[in-house]
Image (cartoon, rainbow, N blue to C red; front, side, top):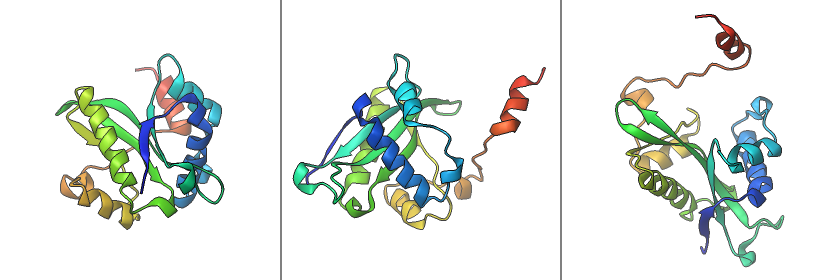
Length: 171
């Protein structure tokens, strides 16, 4: 299938938000989403962006029944590992269901790795929900390692009221 991977622009925010919504519906976490399209525009496309994004796009003749040509995306940011140094963190990788199995997800992931490598990164990190066997199999097929089972690490989070109390705590 003919497709292109390119850097996302401000004009892509509506489609990024649409696909993010599709992903959160699939993962059954829509009730946890608090950001808006305006947040994405500001946080990803301002002078000092908090994240970067790439888009997978197909030609008009392959558009969806709803008329979409932007059919996949990845959001990533740069972090630091005290063991490995510079790290690229892939926040999301999503391809619309009717376009899966055509190499688009692999191409998006590869592009994130290439962008990380160009920035001096030596590692690509991401999380996957534990029940998504299809995604886990896909990532393992790419040669990725499950740190939870292999090294015993757990992904932890501190948010909402707990985050606010922690941030306001006197040390």
